[in-house]
Image (cartoon, rainbow, N blue to C red; front, side, top):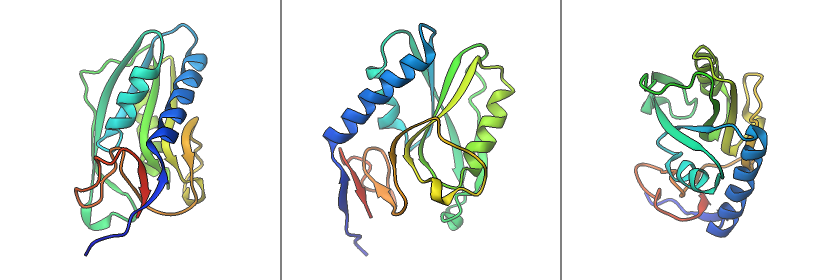
Length: 171
């Protein structure tokens, strides 16, 4: 079955928000090194663009969250793969998430990452859906705040498709 896609944010709108977020992150970190930690795999385009747009010293890495495909609506994680070779101790870490909805996985990740001793730890959302929170959690930075809908494009995929779209579309 083919899903109808409606363009929600153009490539130009995304680029403008990424530039603004990069400036906000740099201001937040001051002169200190910024470390972007993306949650695979929906953040790849977002992390790449933030990496290029953030001035000063910037490092990056990725962690992987494996979800139960049969329970995609609740976004429960089965396994979280921390890339243990990444040392975030003493760094200003910005956890980059594609969509923050219930906040359960993000809350867990932030709790685990705090144990690694970062100087600062902030959550950055491409798409923030605070109306769906089931835990007390706020994104420190966000590109877009939305109340409803599923999205594809700009690295986000549906059934393995549409990640290559240069814009974000509602499904």
